[in-house]
Length: 383
Image 1 (cartoon, rainbow, N blue to C red):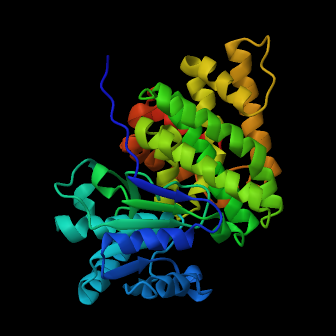
Image 2: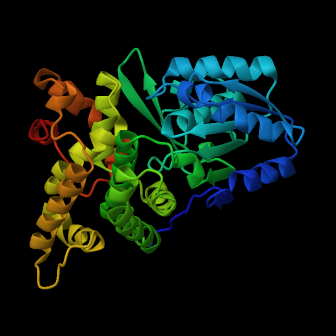
């Protein structure tokens, strides 16, 4: 029997209005000065200041670094690290979606391990635990608030570095759907499809286990039931809460079973074109799973059933095809673009994108290994 390890933050606070409870938990750690890593939007609308005030009520100082841009870069990490050192912060709070969380992880990891964030590209390259990180989530998609994954863009190489390291796991994650109510339709759609991709890639992964399977299929079920409502009516607290549970379950799945070629390929689109990660995943997902169906048809049929498709009497191959139809329909229903060409992706860049995708650590657990030509064909099919 193969030995497996299941990674998850030691404490996870969830539910509407849970932020105040979470701040009490932060106080119990005895920290003195936080670096709040967030983005410009959350800083401008006062969400970061609200967290800063909640910490101040518990005698915890906080400095705000609002320099986490979408697809955070090495430069973002270095700028945040400078603020952390200047303010002598003893822990980090990430506030936002995947970009602030990943930026914060990079800052916290280098703060204790030294060097540059690029030194930790790959799997478990660090020697020491990062500075303690509390991750307050405001989107239902990336699950970065609870994973050991950190994705940072190398501006010079125009690639997204995948840092998969047990030492970047936060000590506390917070999912308060009240913080998600104001998110626009496009962001809700993109992050929701990101969560769906996490669940499906984890379910067909070569590293899947019964634990990750259960998490993945429940996540698929919840997303299929609630994502359309969350997109159409962002103020629907029930839909937001169920999506928060769904993205967390999907995170539990891929944090331990890893991912596949959808993410390996999407990372390259983000690195070269600075495109929204969830949209790239949504566009690539049916194309990659069509490629995987040759070896994973039965698993994809299970996904179809979790998405609400009646698979009674269908062969595994027919169930897999029904899965692809259901994925495409969900993406279309919530306004995901239909092709990579609509996002400005160029045919002439496909060989470079494919070459870099094959070097991405996420592809190692894809159920069917591909050649350069096959990855190029998948990209071309999504154009």
